[in-house]
Length: 315
Image (cartoon, rainbow, N blue to C red):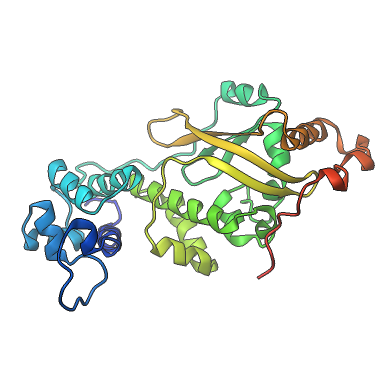
Protein backbone atom coordinates (compact mmCIF):
# COMPACT_ATOMS: atom_id res chain seq x y z
CA UNK A 1 0.00 0.00 0.00
CA UNK A 2 1.24 3.51 -0.80
CA UNK A 3 2.02 5.18 2.58
CA UNK A 4 1.68 8.74 1.36
CA UNK A 5 -1.34 10.85 2.36
CA UNK A 6 -4.09 11.45 -0.17
CA UNK A 7 -3.52 14.88 -1.72
CA UNK A 8 -6.61 15.00 -3.95
CA UNK A 9 -8.27 17.69 -1.84
CA UNK A 10 -5.15 19.88 -2.13
CA UNK A 11 -5.18 19.48 -5.93
CA UNK A 12 -8.91 20.20 -6.14
CA UNK A 13 -8.83 23.27 -3.92
CA UNK A 14 -5.69 24.69 -5.52
CA UNK A 15 -6.95 24.41 -9.10
CA UNK A 16 -10.43 25.66 -8.19
CA UNK A 17 -9.01 28.67 -6.34
CA UNK A 18 -6.79 29.61 -9.27
CA UNK A 19 -9.62 29.13 -11.78
CA UNK A 20 -11.75 31.51 -9.71
CA UNK A 21 -9.10 34.22 -10.02
CA UNK A 22 -9.12 34.34 -13.85
CA UNK A 23 -11.87 36.42 -15.43
CA UNK A 24 -13.29 35.76 -18.92
CA UNK A 25 -12.09 39.22 -19.99
CA UNK A 26 -8.51 38.29 -19.15
CA UNK A 27 -8.53 35.39 -21.62
CA UNK A 28 -10.65 37.03 -24.32
CA UNK A 29 -13.89 35.14 -23.70
CA UNK A 30 -17.35 36.74 -24.00
CA UNK A 31 -18.94 37.76 -20.73
CA UNK A 32 -22.59 37.86 -21.74
CA UNK A 33 -25.02 35.67 -19.86
CA UNK A 34 -25.39 34.87 -16.22
CA UNK A 35 -22.41 33.20 -14.53
CA UNK A 36 -22.90 31.08 -11.43
CA UNK A 37 -19.21 30.86 -10.49
CA UNK A 38 -16.48 33.48 -10.09
CA UNK A 39 -13.79 33.33 -12.71
CA UNK A 40 -13.69 30.74 -15.45
CA UNK A 41 -15.92 27.71 -15.81
CA UNK A 42 -14.34 24.27 -15.99
CA UNK A 43 -15.29 23.86 -19.62
CA UNK A 44 -13.62 27.18 -20.44
CA UNK A 45 -10.37 26.09 -18.81
CA UNK A 46 -10.57 22.79 -20.70
CA UNK A 47 -11.11 24.55 -24.02
CA UNK A 48 -8.23 26.97 -23.47
CA UNK A 49 -5.91 24.18 -22.34
CA UNK A 50 -6.83 21.96 -25.28
CA UNK A 51 -8.29 19.06 -23.30
CA UNK A 52 -11.79 17.67 -22.90
CA UNK A 53 -14.14 19.02 -20.26
CA UNK A 54 -14.48 15.53 -18.80
CA UNK A 55 -10.72 15.20 -18.52
CA UNK A 56 -10.24 18.59 -16.85
CA UNK A 57 -13.14 17.93 -14.46
CA UNK A 58 -11.45 14.69 -13.43
CA UNK A 59 -8.17 16.55 -12.97
CA UNK A 60 -9.77 19.22 -10.79
CA UNK A 61 -11.29 16.51 -8.64
CA UNK A 62 -7.74 15.48 -7.75
CA UNK A 63 -7.11 12.64 -10.20
CA UNK A 64 -3.72 13.89 -11.34
CA UNK A 65 -1.70 10.67 -11.34
CA UNK A 66 -0.37 9.81 -14.79
CA UNK A 67 -1.01 13.26 -16.29
CA UNK A 68 1.73 14.28 -18.72
CA UNK A 69 3.95 17.31 -18.18
CA UNK A 70 2.69 18.82 -21.45
CA UNK A 71 -0.89 18.78 -20.20
CA UNK A 72 0.10 20.19 -16.81
CA UNK A 73 2.00 22.93 -18.64
CA UNK A 74 -1.10 23.76 -20.68
CA UNK A 75 -3.26 23.96 -17.55
CA UNK A 76 -0.62 26.10 -15.79
CA UNK A 77 -0.51 28.53 -18.72
CA UNK A 78 -4.30 28.73 -18.90
CA UNK A 79 -4.59 29.46 -15.18
CA UNK A 80 -1.70 31.93 -15.43
CA UNK A 81 0.25 30.26 -12.65
CA UNK A 82 3.48 31.98 -11.65
CA UNK A 83 6.73 30.01 -11.33
CA UNK A 84 6.13 29.07 -7.69
CA UNK A 85 2.55 27.98 -8.36
CA UNK A 86 3.63 25.94 -11.38
CA UNK A 87 6.30 24.20 -9.28
CA UNK A 88 3.67 23.47 -6.62
CA UNK A 89 1.30 21.94 -9.19
CA UNK A 90 4.08 19.67 -10.47
CA UNK A 91 4.99 18.73 -6.90
CA UNK A 92 1.36 17.73 -6.27
CA UNK A 93 1.39 15.62 -9.42
CA UNK A 94 4.65 13.96 -8.42
CA UNK A 95 3.33 13.20 -4.94
CA UNK A 96 0.23 11.56 -6.44
CA UNK A 97 2.25 8.97 -8.32
CA UNK A 98 2.01 5.46 -6.84
CA UNK A 99 5.12 4.46 -4.92
CA UNK A 100 6.25 0.82 -5.24
CA UNK A 101 8.42 1.02 -2.16
CA UNK A 102 7.75 2.24 1.34
CA UNK A 103 9.25 5.65 1.87
CA UNK A 104 11.71 6.14 4.68
CA UNK A 105 10.77 8.61 7.37
CA UNK A 106 12.58 11.91 7.04
CA UNK A 107 15.13 12.46 9.77
CA UNK A 108 16.26 15.79 11.11
CA UNK A 109 19.68 16.69 9.77
CA UNK A 110 22.50 17.84 12.01
CA UNK A 111 23.95 21.02 10.54
CA UNK A 112 27.62 20.42 9.65
CA UNK A 113 30.17 22.46 11.65
CA UNK A 114 31.32 24.20 8.45
CA UNK A 115 27.89 25.84 8.14
CA UNK A 116 28.07 27.22 11.68
CA UNK A 117 31.57 28.50 10.94
CA UNK A 118 30.19 30.29 7.90
CA UNK A 119 27.42 31.89 9.95
CA UNK A 120 29.80 32.97 12.69
CA UNK A 121 32.10 34.64 10.17
CA UNK A 122 29.34 37.15 9.26
CA UNK A 123 29.84 39.87 11.85
CA UNK A 124 27.64 42.62 10.39
CA UNK A 125 24.87 40.45 8.92
CA UNK A 126 22.27 38.43 10.77
CA UNK A 127 22.30 34.95 9.25
CA UNK A 128 20.46 31.75 10.02
CA UNK A 129 19.55 28.40 8.47
CA UNK A 130 15.99 27.09 8.35
CA UNK A 131 14.50 23.81 7.22
CA UNK A 132 11.31 23.60 5.18
CA UNK A 133 9.15 23.65 8.31
CA UNK A 134 10.71 27.06 9.16
CA UNK A 135 12.60 25.80 12.22
CA UNK A 136 15.81 27.75 12.80
CA UNK A 137 18.42 24.99 12.94
CA UNK A 138 21.52 27.23 13.07
CA UNK A 139 22.17 30.95 13.57
CA UNK A 140 24.94 33.42 14.27
CA UNK A 141 25.03 35.68 17.32
CA UNK A 142 23.58 38.68 15.49
CA UNK A 143 20.61 36.64 14.20
CA UNK A 144 19.89 35.44 17.74
CA UNK A 145 20.03 39.04 18.93
CA UNK A 146 17.95 40.41 16.04
CA UNK A 147 15.26 37.76 16.48
CA UNK A 148 15.45 37.65 20.28
CA UNK A 149 11.62 37.88 20.56
CA UNK A 150 11.46 34.68 18.51
CA UNK A 151 14.25 32.88 20.37
CA UNK A 152 12.72 33.90 23.74
CA UNK A 153 9.15 33.07 22.69
CA UNK A 154 7.01 30.50 24.50
CA UNK A 155 6.41 28.98 21.05
CA UNK A 156 9.86 27.35 20.88
CA UNK A 157 9.59 23.56 20.92
CA UNK A 158 10.66 21.27 23.73
CA UNK A 159 14.20 21.32 22.36
CA UNK A 160 14.25 25.12 22.54
CA UNK A 161 14.22 25.38 18.76
CA UNK A 162 12.50 28.50 17.36
CA UNK A 163 9.96 28.19 14.58
CA UNK A 164 8.82 31.18 12.53
CA UNK A 165 5.34 29.81 11.87
CA UNK A 166 4.57 29.19 15.53
CA UNK A 167 5.96 32.61 16.47
CA UNK A 168 4.01 34.64 13.89
CA UNK A 169 0.72 32.83 14.41
CA UNK A 170 0.77 31.87 18.10
CA UNK A 171 2.73 34.61 19.90
CA UNK A 172 0.82 37.86 20.37
CA UNK A 173 4.11 39.70 20.78
CA UNK A 174 4.88 39.07 17.11
CA UNK A 175 2.35 41.80 16.21
CA UNK A 176 4.59 44.40 17.85
CA UNK A 177 7.81 42.98 16.42
CA UNK A 178 6.89 43.20 12.72
CA UNK A 179 5.70 46.36 11.01
CA UNK A 180 3.87 44.34 8.36
CA UNK A 181 2.57 41.42 10.39
CA UNK A 182 -0.02 40.50 7.75
CA UNK A 183 2.68 40.27 5.09
CA UNK A 184 4.84 38.11 7.36
CA UNK A 185 2.08 35.60 8.06
CA UNK A 186 0.98 35.54 4.40
CA UNK A 187 4.49 34.54 3.33
CA UNK A 188 4.83 32.05 6.18
CA UNK A 189 1.64 30.16 5.31
CA UNK A 190 2.56 30.21 1.60
CA UNK A 191 6.02 28.78 2.34
CA UNK A 192 4.51 25.96 4.41
CA UNK A 193 1.96 25.25 1.66
CA UNK A 194 4.76 24.91 -0.91
CA UNK A 195 6.71 22.66 1.45
CA UNK A 196 3.65 20.44 1.93
CA UNK A 197 3.47 20.00 -1.84
CA UNK A 198 7.15 19.15 -2.03
CA UNK A 199 7.21 16.74 0.93
CA UNK A 200 3.66 15.44 1.52
CA UNK A 201 4.96 12.56 3.65
CA UNK A 202 6.64 14.84 6.23
CA UNK A 203 4.96 13.83 9.49
CA UNK A 204 6.38 16.76 11.47
CA UNK A 205 5.11 19.21 8.86
CA UNK A 206 1.62 17.70 8.97
CA UNK A 207 1.66 17.94 12.77
CA UNK A 208 2.76 21.59 12.58
CA UNK A 209 -0.02 22.45 10.12
CA UNK A 210 -2.52 20.62 12.32
CA UNK A 211 -1.37 22.50 15.41
CA UNK A 212 -1.56 25.89 13.69
CA UNK A 213 -4.95 25.08 12.16
CA UNK A 214 -6.30 24.18 15.59
CA UNK A 215 -4.93 27.19 17.45
CA UNK A 216 -4.99 30.03 14.92
CA UNK A 217 -7.93 31.33 12.89
CA UNK A 218 -5.47 33.57 11.02
CA UNK A 219 -3.57 30.49 9.89
CA UNK A 220 -6.73 28.61 8.88
CA UNK A 221 -7.78 31.51 6.65
CA UNK A 222 -4.43 31.72 4.92
CA UNK A 223 -4.01 27.97 4.58
CA UNK A 224 -7.40 27.75 2.87
CA UNK A 225 -6.28 30.35 0.30
CA UNK A 226 -3.78 27.83 -1.16
CA UNK A 227 -1.22 30.55 -1.85
CA UNK A 228 2.30 29.22 -2.38
CA UNK A 229 5.71 30.83 -2.11
CA UNK A 230 9.08 29.26 -2.85
CA UNK A 231 11.36 32.14 -3.78
CA UNK A 232 11.15 35.29 -1.70
CA UNK A 233 13.24 38.12 -0.32
CA UNK A 234 12.98 41.87 0.07
CA UNK A 235 12.71 44.41 2.86
CA UNK A 236 11.50 43.77 6.39
CA UNK A 237 10.78 46.44 8.98
CA UNK A 238 11.09 45.38 12.59
CA UNK A 239 10.72 47.08 15.97
CA UNK A 240 13.46 45.65 18.15
CA UNK A 241 13.09 45.86 21.94
CA UNK A 242 16.74 46.97 22.37
CA UNK A 243 17.58 49.20 19.40
CA UNK A 244 14.21 50.34 18.09
CA UNK A 245 13.16 50.57 14.45
CA UNK A 246 15.11 48.62 11.84
CA UNK A 247 14.63 48.45 8.08
CA UNK A 248 16.64 45.53 6.70
CA UNK A 249 16.96 43.74 3.40
CA UNK A 250 16.88 39.96 3.48
CA UNK A 251 17.65 37.24 0.97
CA UNK A 252 17.17 33.47 1.38
CA UNK A 253 19.56 31.21 -0.54
CA UNK A 254 19.11 27.49 -1.15
CA UNK A 255 21.53 25.48 0.98
CA UNK A 256 21.94 21.94 -0.42
CA UNK A 257 22.72 20.05 2.77
CA UNK A 258 20.56 16.99 2.09
CA UNK A 259 18.72 15.39 -0.80
CA UNK A 260 15.86 14.51 1.56
CA UNK A 261 15.21 17.87 3.18
CA UNK A 262 15.28 21.48 1.96
CA UNK A 263 17.33 24.09 3.80
CA UNK A 264 17.79 27.80 3.22
CA UNK A 265 20.40 30.28 4.39
CA UNK A 266 18.83 33.69 5.05
CA UNK A 267 20.90 36.84 5.47
CA UNK A 268 19.69 40.18 6.83
CA UNK A 269 21.69 43.33 6.10
CA UNK A 270 21.23 47.10 6.36
CA UNK A 271 21.90 49.76 3.75
CA UNK A 272 25.53 50.94 4.15
CA UNK A 273 25.80 54.31 5.84
CA UNK A 274 22.19 54.35 6.97
CA UNK A 275 20.83 54.80 10.51
CA UNK A 276 19.64 51.20 10.24
CA UNK A 277 23.24 50.06 9.77
CA UNK A 278 24.21 52.01 12.91
CA UNK A 279 21.45 50.28 14.87
CA UNK A 280 22.45 46.87 13.49
CA UNK A 281 26.08 47.55 14.52
CA UNK A 282 24.84 48.51 17.98
CA UNK A 283 22.89 45.27 18.16
CA UNK A 284 25.99 43.34 17.06
CA UNK A 285 27.97 45.05 19.83
CA UNK A 286 25.30 44.17 22.38
CA UNK A 287 25.28 40.58 21.15
CA UNK A 288 29.04 40.36 21.67
CA UNK A 289 28.90 41.86 25.17
CA UNK A 290 27.94 39.71 28.18
CA UNK A 291 24.62 40.87 29.62
CA UNK A 292 26.14 41.76 32.99
CA UNK A 293 28.65 44.14 31.40
CA UNK A 294 26.20 46.17 29.28
CA UNK A 295 25.73 49.83 29.97
CA UNK A 296 22.10 50.75 30.46
CA UNK A 297 22.59 54.02 28.59
CA UNK A 298 24.15 52.21 25.63
CA UNK A 299 21.45 49.58 25.38
CA UNK A 300 19.16 51.86 23.38
CA UNK A 301 19.81 54.58 20.83
CA UNK A 302 18.75 58.08 21.76
CA UNK A 303 15.07 58.83 21.16
CA UNK A 304 15.86 61.30 18.36
CA UNK A 305 17.95 58.67 16.56
CA UNK A 306 15.43 55.92 16.95
CA UNK A 307 13.13 56.84 14.09
CA UNK A 308 9.37 56.51 14.06
CA UNK A 309 7.67 53.89 16.16
CA UNK A 310 6.61 51.25 13.64
CA UNK A 311 4.79 48.94 16.00
CA UNK A 312 1.59 47.54 14.67
CA UNK A 313 -1.46 49.39 16.04
CA UNK A 314 -3.59 47.39 18.42
CA UNK A 315 -6.55 45.60 16.92
